[in-house]
Image 1 (cartoon, rainbow, N blue to C red):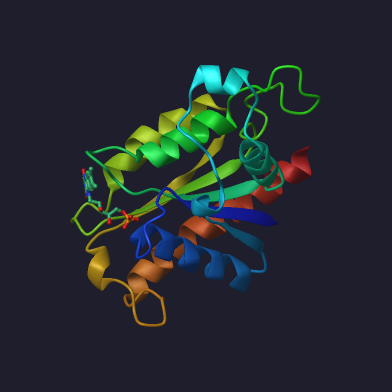
Image 2 (spheres, rainbow, N blue to C red):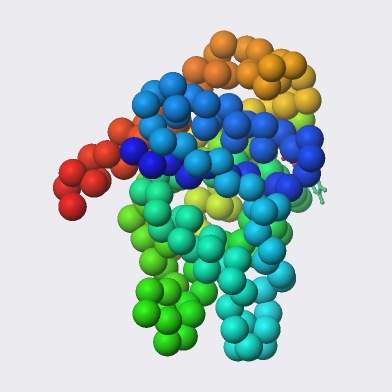
Length: 194
Ligand SMILES: Cc1cc2nc3c(=O)[nH]c(=O)nc-3n(C[C@H](O)[C@H](O)[C@H](O)COP(=O)(O)O)c2cc1C
């Protein structure tokens, strides 16, 4: 199974980027082919309809291709003001915007529809960014994603990771693993049904 893992943060020491690494490692241990996508590697401006009318940026197409190539995703969502980040929203808005007249990307929902998505979040707060997930969930469902019922919010993230990048607490590690496992399980079954 091909799993795409990405975080809604480009911060160097981002908890969510670190959690994405943990999730990708777990997926590989479970036999999946995990791709860790860094949003910093994509040159994507703030969405602007006039800008789009002059041509969709090449990196938006590259992002759509990466998303479309993976039936399963894990999104690690930071929490800003009780919601997900502007970076994540802007990325999803561009990725879901139809490219007029394009042979593949004229359907805006194409990179999203039918994907099995697991949500994780991390914050140094006690709630672990959980509220960002409650806003992200309806957006993903609206785009045709299948959301895994399991999800996890990692609280007190500043002290959660060891020097090797792994989660120090075995219970936290197990909860992240359960999300990854469920996403892979569901994506495999959906593929079989196709
Ligand atoms: C504008 C802003 C608003 C924030 N609001 C919240 C919040 O509502 N809840 C929370 O737990 N953390 C909040 N934080 C703290 C972030 O969780 C923290 O910056 C975290 O490190 C961001 O994720 P990252 O480490 O993956 O970059 C906020 C940070 C910023 C910059």
